[in-house]
Length: 276
Image 1 (cartoon, rainbow, N blue to C red):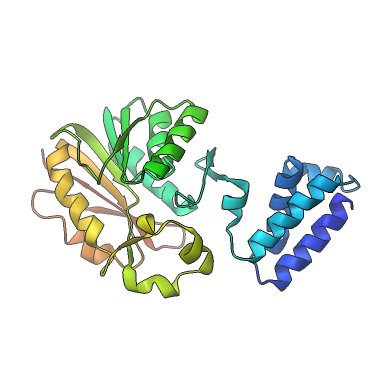
Image 2 (cartoon, helix red, strand yellow; image 1 turned 90 degrees about the horizontal axis):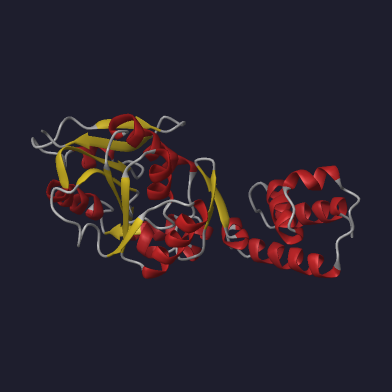
């Protein structure tokens, strides 16, 4: 079995199983099976697969056809130009969340102390730590997620301090210049409408916020009043259709929130500064 033949067969299997982007997925899974980058597949289509490589590739294809996300098979996902380790204990990083990084750097690039609430794999905390000179903290209620985040920080040599707890519990009052978060924002009743890959494989603790999907936003805005220093910023990713209701949570103690759309024009990030 050559690389070229394996790619053709894998693509056909994935396409027949209605897996999105079947060719790209086959390339990623084959590269993972033979421990090579995708470029190698095009440079060496005649390369023969060993029996073990073929067995691994077949297993990866089977898992993907049964709904397991590619990132949980390869255990990696790129975010903001860096490769992060991911497991089913954490959400898979999405490109849209890079807007949180960009918005944070735009409004609070000189922050000296940053807190990432609900850090998951650590993508926001680690990225901001490496992109700034700030002392960076990250919290999560899930000990399993914190273990993934700590490993990512070690691999990427980011000096992030990790805290186990619910949102900002354990964080000192008036201690942060910037709080960032990609909080759970899916209403509990919307579970059946999610893609199978999300509903069955990604951690529900990081997905679902409660009946309305606004519960964690409300708590974060209130917590930020205690944890932020005067003039500090709160930056959060927005769920679809939530912008107007989240904006209303910022009262007169906050400056007018700034909204950042994603590439599709959908409101993706909300940022507001606590009055000095």
